[in-house]
Image (cartoon, rainbow, N blue to C red; front, side):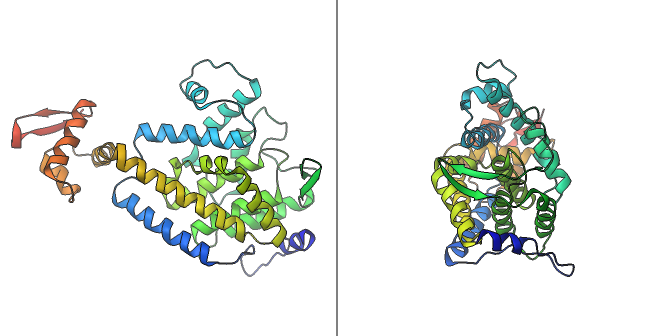
Length: 334
């Protein structure tokens, strides 16, 4: 099956974009419907850009989970310390992996999802000083061994540039759903295994970048945490897709992970941070001076009591100051 799969991946068409094989199943359709509904709620509630507190917390979770899958031993607390430029005691390799990941995720918006050049640049940052060939495709054959069993033999290294070129052409297909496209790329990249090291973390990173192009919420959505918690299922989905020669099983797995992550985000925001997100969204509108009525004109479903609580929170957080009294109060941005 794998040799047939490699032959299929090497078919290059000058007339159309090569579409990697997968089936649309009922499970996939249900996941897409559920994700789309949740993204609608995220956008309606101005949560596509989380508050700095939640954004930082989720970025730490993302880095921790993605590297933990690869065997990194640093805790979330240690990663937080490194982000804050504090000294951390731990294995030098693990510290370097985290520092590199921090640099990559800080530059997330600068990578172009359909650019192979961007992809290689991200790998160079992510694997800097961890391997000699960071930012370059492998120049030898590789296989993935679990215990004493060979789980996967990657395509010959000479084929990697052509396979990756086709995969990036596929990302430019305007007729393909971004949600599907991100999962297919993740699986196909893992199958090709283009690097000597760093393939897993690059697959997860690039799926985030693909999703973020259309849905900004994914920049800070730590679905890697759920992958880390269901690691056995993650590798099982990869293996099952390898066996069938299609990414269908992996798409089903990843869409479910994304759906659950969105659910966690909505539950968390509804419970704690909704007022902060509203305030930050409003401040970005650039009104130097505003009233409670102006605030409620933006958030039309908000009660006057909730609007007052929001504005009181903004004052406490020093986001703006107040002038005047009661209904005549004006709020001025600092």
